[in-house]
Length: 472
Image 1 (cartoon, rainbow, N blue to C red):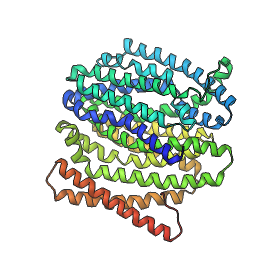
Image 2: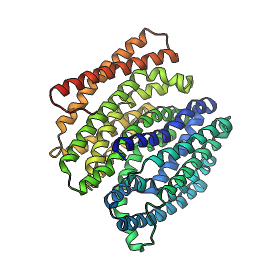
Image 3: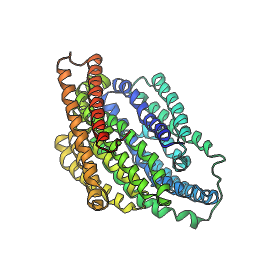
Image 4: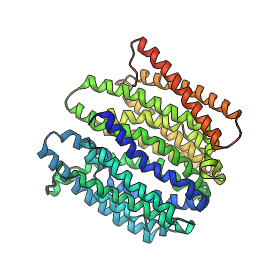
């Protein structure tokens, strides 16, 4: 299947994984309030951390390794079998640890956490890493979409008050498990499990563990933010931060989707020594990603103050204030993602990725500890901004002599200029419209799309005439 089709399917998969809970967010916000959303956020965040432990670093290591051996069925079968056996051991231990947390540590969120147990169970049968390594994205997208649509319907039918938060947790937890089981069926005929020795299985543990360090570091500054806000500033502030961050996380799904598609492709090309072709792919990807994230960042910043109270309810007005600066993390996330998925990981230079995200995590923890007590949820926003800036900065320091960073930074400058013009136009139009209505928000959004698209088309025409490449 072509890269464009895979990217389309993977964008759908990533977006539905995040978008459907967002569709239910306005309903949940009004039914449960800021404290209910904050309580659920804390339980869900802890569940995600245990799931990350259960999956170790397979999201990157598994995809890369399968992509490199997929041309040989015998090597593919043995590699798949070894990785899965290791996965069962690690995920099994993580499941036991999760149950220990639920029954021995969890506080007010215990009931919700108990009904999230199937999230940890699903780690035992998650084969996304194998399917993506084989360049199979369509079944993942379609089957997960169907399961999550059913889950969304259940939320609207059965969740009627704050006391029903356990139902909300159970529904999304079960949807994750069923989605993984449905995708496992796709592997039939494409790979065969063969029992391998414990030694052969455990050889995958070390490289996975190395990548897991980076996974946990990312978790610290993308998930521990909410844990720290919850414990320092309280449930209400965590609820406000949760909804602001949820929108940004949804938009970042576009970035990770493209990166996930490109990583197995680049890994396969790397094995075949197609250096020049790889360089062209990276350049076009950087151009496209920076174009996308700049549109998202400046667009969200332009309408966040009107969007939040309309979408989540008046109680979440401050989420818009948090969302505006948080949107600019998208530019840093996009830039770092291209370097990670198309340079660092395909070349097996995992130490660069680990160093960059660990530095980001340290920065985040320090800033959060200093600012959350006084600035509450806004302190977490500042911590996230500085952490996300640290990651590409460290990558630049380590790779500045190998990559054409001047060209990449030029892309950021051009699209940021276009984004700034778009933001000014959107705010100008907004000042002429009635305050806070879906109609005015729609007009502002349409204005942003038209202005940004028109300016990009002009830029690309200029680049074509001067013989430069464009992202499309």
